[in-house]
Length: 190
Image (cartoon, rainbow, N blue to C red; front, side, top):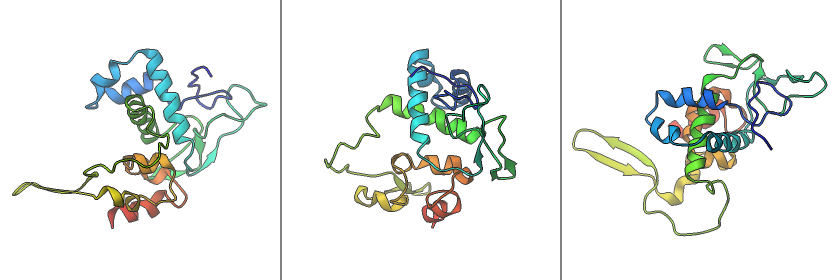
């Protein structure tokens, strides 16, 4: 399928255009890694990221019909209308910045590890999981036990949120369902 980032398009394959993703990375610590990719690599990564994010449930309603063909629905879940997050109401004329950022950041993660969403089966357990606590005075770091990783994100959450829990904080209240909005954030922070 060819790359198509038409907002609300009937054949769109990405939430972000390459230009949008470039702008997201322009002010990030990963800008050099992103700009090192070719345009084609960026497009493939953005399509893979969008496909993964399509597994999630979001606030609001999918806009319809598509902007480029009144006889067809839009291909992707974004843009949406009627969702409210931190005082911002989603509309059919744009995609909220946190969703664009999630798409771009996940695209680079997937480019760097293209098989990360493919279940490979049991294997060796890593020696340490993500950081659980850090302390500056007397410098201390505590890691989550990798065997307990599933408890940090609702086990019913889509695999993309289990593999990249930062997406929950990034997209926060745009997510809905048992893994979204306040339910998952409450579990993560409690």
